[in-house]
Length: 318
Image (cartoon, rainbow, N blue to C red; front, top):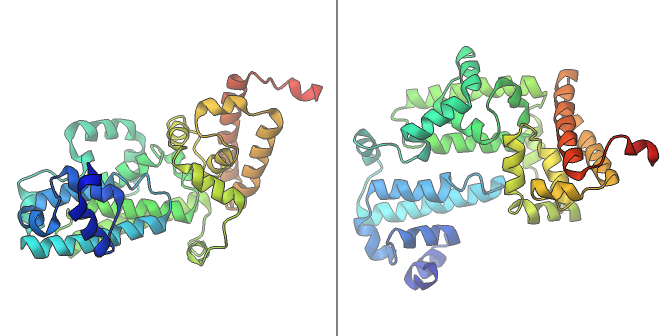
């Protein structure tokens, strides 16, 4: 379908905003020639385009730079659309008055499911005066459904992704500066709680943002397998054993799904756990956080032994 949209592809490439998924979504929405089709493209249609192109893909895009690039492209595309259609940004408020938010979690069924799944986290956020439904939704997507799960957020980069996804969901809903300020305060309050629980300092953000060194073979392998590892990531979060360091070490060992764990030998498993402890514990400042991280590894070990059939007694024989 997208391959046939020659005029659309030429336009996207000419404007330096080409993205295969955006092209496919536009084509699916009947936009084959932006110069003509954007003239009748409504605010509601653009909101749907943004939801599908940015919000839904936020979980798929692994690195922050890719998300920033996509948002820049969408901003440029929005300017062109507004120019062609004559729709002003102020019309967003009018559209929101008589229609549901374009964000897919706004449906009653999805919201009820979220509130049931993250009921404990909701109570915790309300108790600490930092409750926001969109923040709750984003945290739940990252495997945080109760207070104990907050330590699942393990790096400044992952926290940056959460705040960006939160702002994407809030985009268009905040009608004045006062509401934007309140939303920012909610995020700041929760960030303080998260940093206190994990011991991760904000100063290390600078280290994350500095020019990165050339990827090691291991890093390149992880990036290559991240798309294939979605099943593993979802499974880890669902079963309460999500750790970024563990996830990356498993990917580096070519484990991209729960079934792949069966093939890990005792030596491979021990090496993965050793590396995770070295990598993970250097970011944890207090013993309680280290104990929680250890519990995750113990839980994963039980699963691995059950799937692989390797018993603890076999350690004595080696």
